[in-house]
Image 1 (cartoon, protein in one colour):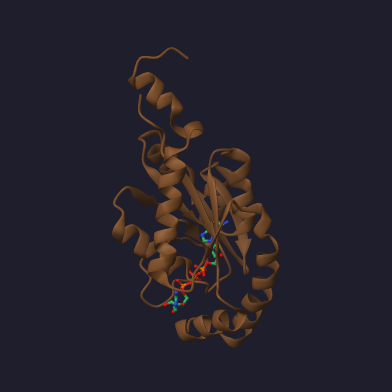
Image 2 (image 1 turned 180 degrees about the horizontal axis):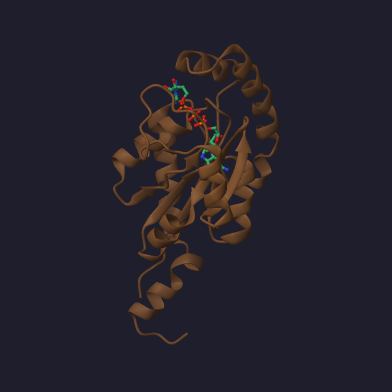
Length: 204
Ligand code: ADP
Ligand code: 5GP
């Protein structure tokens, strides 16, 4: 029997470095599959359809939603975002570890459907540093910037909904911590005992 893949959910305030950490994590680990979300947000410069997101218009998104094609969905900063259901389920059933980078509303929908998923919250070193990072990224208008800073505190308040907190002061350190958590979770008795008992032919 194959051990089912681990479903990991990463959330955190906009600009805290989720995308950067995910990129590092995937570069260092070929055993993690990133779920590419669908969104009605317009692509930022450099973003590629099917790589960063599946960019849809509102009608296309709503049609997929009606057909039950999303595992979860949420409206974030005025746009719709959703996780494609088929991809995630197929990968998990094949024993692959799957990573979702989604907001807290979506994360709580996943929590209800997948009790065994692991929830990671990425936190910035300070609010000042968070603001610097969003400004440096240079993708937000001043109005969007204010909206994201206001939301940051609201999101940090929800920290208790998560299993692990990852301080992103240094990218390599934060990536290393996520890798350690993945290893520990995969080795947990609760998650792996069926696999080992079957391997040794021990009756359950
Ligand atoms: P998010 O996906 O959470 O919105 P990004 O990954 O786009 O955030 O990162 C926002 C900005 O912060 C980017 O310019 C990125 O290069 C920078 N950044 C990310 N992590 C760090 C870090 N540990 N130290 C300094 N800058 C960082
Ligand atoms: P951005 O527009 O900056 O890429 O993402 C904005 C927010 O939407 C981030 O908090 C990100 O985690 C969240 N997000 C991205 N994809 C999804 C998704 O599929 N579902 C949900 N619920 N949130 C998402």
